[in-house]
Length: 192
Image (cartoon, rainbow, N blue to C red; front, side):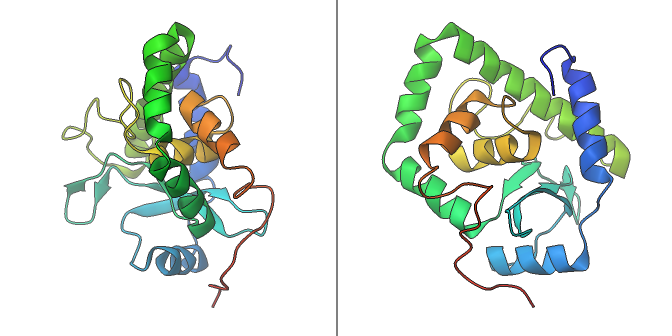
């Protein structure tokens, strides 16, 4: 994705790419094992480990039963979840919140990440026929004003690629020694 694309064009391209390969029964089974529960609303795998296992999934804006779900990009890979939890526990969110308060360029990029997330979810919602009225304007991870959940921000980076979310990008860099989507470190065999 280039910065020359508008947010809407970028969202359309990303959504079309994700929706071109719907989640398979094996993907759903793997994510079920990763999460320890059925992945309600999962429509596609947005990012995979080098070995092919899901790292982050894309979910519908409305879960079964009509439950609004704003977290469109959802982190599922156990090694990614563990690594990002470590830096959350170390207080990295405070550092990133301070960065947002002090760096106007990062703040603007983070606000753009929020707009991209909303536009991406809107494209998904249109494609699957879901309403967004109960989550309109709400993205994930605390965007656009604060860092609340690094899991969600990392998921956006993994699904949408580098440059989609500056905080997700920083978090991915911070955990590279423990997690890298290009290096399989899957510790548990969860395949059927």
